[in-house]
Amino acid sequence: MQIKEPVKILDVPIHPFTMDEAVSALENSIQNGTQAFVVTANAEIIMMCQQDNEYKKIVSQSAEIVLPDGAGAVWAGRHLGYKIPERVAGFDLYCQLLNKAAKKGYKVYFFGGSPGIAEAAKAKSEELYPGVQIVGCRNGYFKEEESSQIIAEINASGADILFAALGAPKQEKWLEKYRSQLNQKVLMGIGGSFDVFAGKMERAPKWMQDASLEWMFRLYKQPSRFMRMMALPKFVLKVVFCGKKA
Ligand code: UDP
Image 1: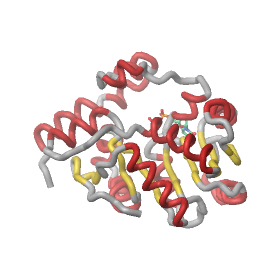
Image 2 (image 1 turned 180 degrees about the horizontal axis):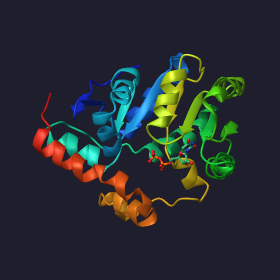
Image 3 (image 1 turned 180 degrees about the vertical axis):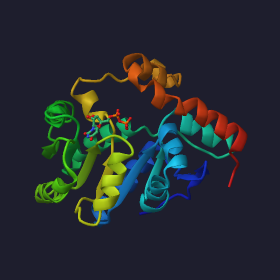
Image 4 (image 1 turned 90 degrees about the vertical axis):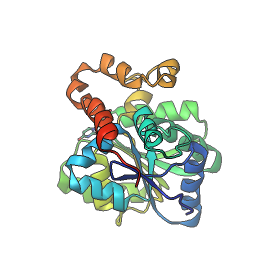
């Protein structure tokens, strides 16, 4: 896999890929039979890495591709003087990969969300991307000791791509812990993306995404995220006062 040199935002490496470059790097992995663990790092994830060394190590050392997800990550990279061509949001990459999967016949497994959500997301994917093969679904509520059974089911499905929607950092920690036992060539945490496809959660309208206001929409829809979202202003302050180009 050809990897662009990462830039560092608050000591977290970010690969300044465009969406097309990210999709083609992941397709290369599928075609070459090498495994790629991809993290879409938004400001919240970069801030989690400041406090959680285990998570930082996973994002910095285990993931093959770390993408700038969200306006905050793109702004921070540019503020520090790096060329960040565009935002590569996890949800958009998930959609792009489903589209490719439908066209090229890659098989996909949906792991995560409340019971029934992955199945509803599968139905929506089949409607949006005719021909896409979602070869298995499993909800994201399980006991740690069930992991080996879950891995066996995922591997038996013959999937090439595994989307894990367990929320950050749980999804990356689970994928890292078990990646050597997982046969899929693309491993990716996608947070609440199945909830969006299942109609349980709305995505911000395009104009809000373009105006970098997606965070405001999420806060309006899920006020319970207020404390988590306090990471965003802290992120901005940290980048402005402590950030430096590596
Ligand atoms: N979830 C899960 N198992 C868990 C905790 C969460 O499957 O043990 C799911 C939850 O149902 C939701 C998603 O993970 O669908 C988390 O969505 P969120 O938008 O919070 O993702 P984040 O912003 O953390 O990436």
